Structure formats: C-alpha cells, structure tokens
Image (tube, rainbow, N blue to C red; front, side):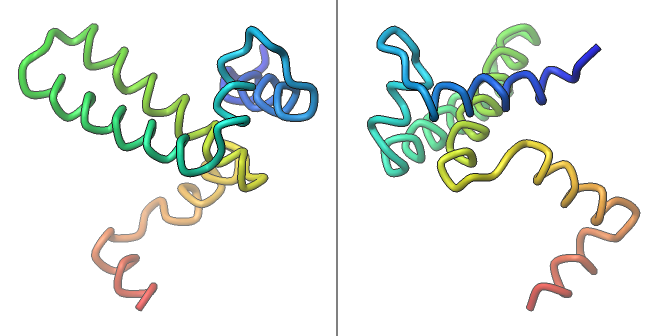
Length: 104
C-alpha cells in the first residue's frame, strides 16, 4: 500500500499543476505562500490549544490539519513530505542539542 504522505503529495502536486475549482488545495495555491503560511500558524495554535484542554481525538485532528497545511505550504516551494522525512532520517540518533549546534 502506498504511504498516505505519498498519496497526499501526489494530489497536492496534481492540484498545483491542474487546479480544480472545488479543490481546497487549489484555493490555497491561488492565495499564495503568505496565506498558506498564515494557515499553518493558525493550525499550529489550534493544535497547542487542543493539547491543553481537548480530547485526544481533537488533538489528532488538529495535528492532521497542521501536517496537511504544512505539506501544502512546502509544495509551494517545490518540496514534498519525503524531503522532510529524509531530513528527519539524517537527524535520527543525533542529540537535538548537538544537531542545533551544528547549524550555527
């Protein structure tokens, strides 16, 4: 079975290359990076708020919204979820403190 992130990347690319009037992804692409970035910030806040006081199902839903909007935003820079997964693989097993220091 194809990974859901791969499927999502495919649909987002299709909507970017061939916009559809009723597509939310096409709508976000038309609005542009600044608008999509604001949606990511909004979804991040909703996730933080949900983790403080909402049931687990709501937290998961908000996390999915954040991932979705982040992937759409990344696609506007011609990046895919796989690019992020590769970066996470590179960092795996490295102390977060050491990794952050290596970027200075």
